[in-house]
Amino acid sequence: MKVLFTQTAVVLLGLGTLMSGCAKHAQSSKTGITYNDKKTGGYERFRKTHPTPGPGLVPIEGGTFVMGGSADQDVTYDYNNVRRRVTVPSFYMDETEVANQDWLDYLHWISVTYPQDHELYYNALPDTLVWRNPLSYNEPYVDNYLRHPAFQDYPVVGVSWDQAQDYCVWRTDRVNENILRETGRMVAWNDLNGNGKGKGQAPAPSNKEPFNTDIYLNGQYTGAGIDGKKMIVDLSPNAKVTTGANGKGGKQPVRHVRMEDGILKQAYRLPSEAEWEYAALALIGNTQFENIDDNKVYPWNGLGVRSSKRVTRGLILANFKRGLGDNMGVGGYLNDKADITAPVREYPPNDFGLYNMAGNVNEWVEDTYRQTSFEDVEDFNPFRGNEFSNKRLADASKGLYAKDKYGRPIKDPSVSNKKLKYADLLALQQAANANPNQPNTATSGAAVGANAAAPAIPVQKNPLDGKPYSPDARGYGDTVNTTLYGTTTLVNNHSKVFKGGSWNDMAFWLNPATRRFMDEDESSSTVGFRCAMTLVGEPEISPEGKPHYAIKQAKAFKAKQ
Image 1 (tube, one colour):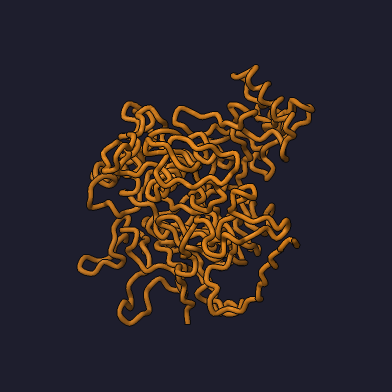
Image 2 (cartoon, one colour):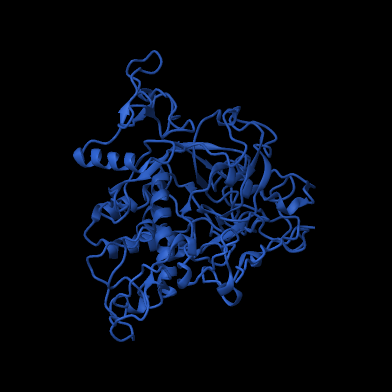
């Protein structure tokens, strides 16, 4: 019997609100000082929560699995996903692939927010020319696939890995902005342009940059037209009463949302290859008391690609190419109900509730491709592609981030593998201000291999002590001869992994262990993507009905009179 998987275990009320009732009497277990009391210093403690997924996501309870283990044979002789046991932490993942309508929402936002920035809009457009083929009449898809309403719930294609990254950043900011506006922590949507019913509501200034989560959390997105009517009361004894968001003098000081409040969502991102493969297999439906009853070759049970249920017996379970020249079956009874892509909810979901984890379109993942990634692998949360970066400071003494023209923080390669001393941080800031056009980077001296034209590994020089430090601490910046890139090899830091098989692939590629790669700025009519999000806190998604150790609360401290 399959395990019933529900999201209700993660839906907790009162997310991010101050502890109520007994919360006013809560105290630190280490100092005895009362929380949420301005008289004792304004220490704030919020209800511990298990955050709900962001819009469009479902929870994926993590665990151990054999990565590459679902492939029973290496038909292509690539030897690129050899079996190894790894652990994937719990996370959230999009229930469906990102659809055309989702991408049109993104394009619409760009067009109304930056109406004069034609370059930004153009760069966000999918390459609809991926449908063109010299020996196929696919031109109608070039003109219609993205924008015609008949295709609005079909997966977006023609999107590069780089474009998917930009979409994730945009989606993060729009979700968090909507949360703040709907809860009154920022100006509500109805009042955003001064059209709401609220009296005295100041319209949002037209010259303000769009909302960005990092900039907001750093206290740099504030002021009239931004601050809402239901901001959080600031309990700090140093807080001052300022003019309220409604234009009238406030009775008590208020503040912006912080990460500690648990209100905002984590960033949307592409899933790692390990996360994607784990989620596609969905062995949770075949697991009981840590024992896997039956392994899988596809995201569903069995060795075939057809449904065995009585009502749907014989129907194909995914959108793929059944054989050469057979993309849809025989007229009158189409085998998979699709010729090219299909709607993102067309086929049964797997045991995690994810649709189309096999077929329809391949999906980008976060990882950089190396054929032998399995040889250099962490067994916890494996990932290849780390480039460590820091947000650039415009003013280190005030902790202000430098912003690009779109109001987003500028990120630079890390200059150290640890937190800098404050004096060192100021020294770096002074050096950057003295040479604003000189990035703090250098290149290691020796050429790579026998080819003198090959580039060297990028290394950051710490101007404080002269010791080199590479922000590539995970093997991302391998010494690959890029002079051959695009000629004899596509394997370098620009090559990204995609998985899952597509409408134009044979059944072999439906196996979650298969992997292929493409340049990060290339796109295809067979490749789309879905987003993921990190789950913070306890990894167990559905704790009900399972044994647990009793947890005792800390004893309250009371000072003797």
